[in-house]
Length: 373
Ligand SMILES: C=C1C[C@]23C[C@@]1(O)CC[C@H]2[C@@]12CCC[C@@](C)(C(=O)O1)[C@H]2[C@@H]3C(=O)O
Ligand SMILES: O=C(O)CCC(=O)C(=O)O
Ligand SMILES: [Fe+2]
Image (cartoon, rainbow, N blue to C red; front, side):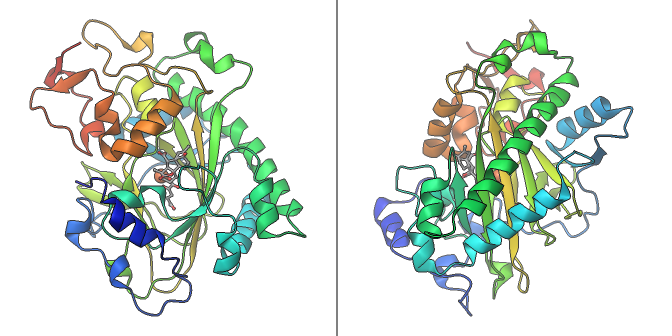
């Protein structure tokens, strides 16, 4: 179970700005073993099952399909989602042009130690003894200041693409949230906060995974759940995303499908659904020959809104499993406790008293749970 590694080790890591695109041999700092992460165990090679692909347009049973996917997997892919293919290509090109800049240039847009936006290593790195084979760029609000640092003369195009992408994603995320909640019998009348003046809040995360000289011993992005209501992920044509599914006994690859988007249930939707939908544990692995790029749209509730299990999903047999939290409070908890964040806001503990990374996948069986609040 990862716990936050010592400050000195972190400082040592943060001094290093290795350009992964140039390295020919896997450094020790990036060499993972099974003890580096409880979930490191490799893919279940007998696994041909994967998350469902759901057509949002030509589908009479869309609610049923989405509900089933959310309960079983906490994830699904969507096609005919109305995001223009050209926009998906444009965001890929924008990401490529960012990550292919010289390291010195990228470091000008570094995320500050306590900041959210900018260029840097995976935020969750501090919980692991080894570094991940990836680099990222996070955008919350306008990217203009960082874009100016990256391309002093030519930053506008990048900002325009980001703005257009966020606009389209916000519409799609709202639509998906209602479909996912709709499958549980929740209507717009049941979630008043969704109609505040601000709508949902979001972050955009561009991830780059360079080709790796020793992919079997490296990790692109370690296993985690997102702290969101839902995440919409665009991956380029290189596979790497895996989801963990108990019933399928392990890690299952999510194959890239041209034009499709991956939708993940996040921790806050798990809370809203009172445990009906597991937030999906996922990770990204790397490969020897191909560079991989992904773009995650992380969608949450408006700031200040306290999210708790929806009252329609709570009764005597199904007591509320979690206390109310705002998104920023939960992000703070995640930054501090990582995989224990969900159990730290939980009102009920299972009789066995376990609290671990798979905790969020184990709460559906309310018989096992002792109500302690
Ligand atoms: C809104 C956010 C969710 C996120 C933390 C952040 O402030 C911005 C980046 C997000 C991300 C993307 C990669 C995985 C993740 C766990 C991380 O370290 O940064 C998520 C965070 C999250 O969902 O908790
Ligand atoms: O690159 C991927 O496929 C996963 C990215 C991810 O999980 C994230 O950005 O939260
Ligand atoms: Fe994620």
